[in-house]
Length: 168
Image (tube, rainbow, N blue to C red; front, side):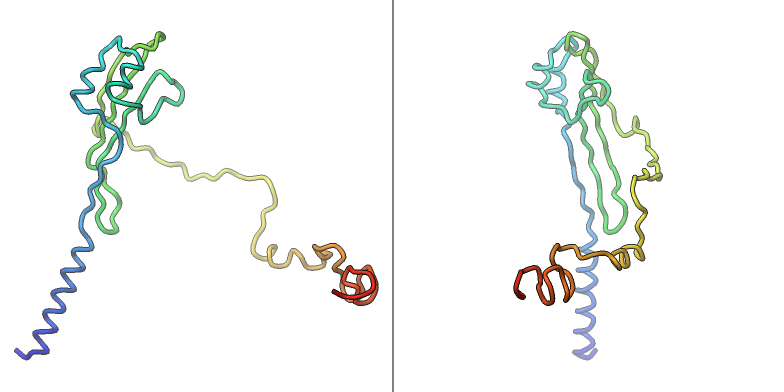
């Protein structure tokens, strides 16, 4: 083989190697999932202060019921331009009773999750429906925005420019 062909093959191999290295998988763990030994310290009857001392502050508190605390974490994988894939999800839901004592501790995972379909509707807004044509030609025929800046025969006479007795 000629030296030029060898260099071309070597360069092609290096480019292919760099191209595949750029498409490596990115695995990320996010959230606040308590360790099992710390979670074991949270028993029915524990106070909110005991829960915070054992496993920390919750990721989220119930929207309609502040007696439920959620600790949420998940592991995801990104690969090149493909959509992010959820590998694992863990949710610990701690429910408190009326006396702010732990009533129940639930461990949920990816099998307990449900897909939520997003609604594609838009909320109408009040006001004018302005299109490109309106934006481009809406100021034609209107008076100047700056007071005293009339044309050549403005409010103070010829060439006045807003200053009595002359121009700027």
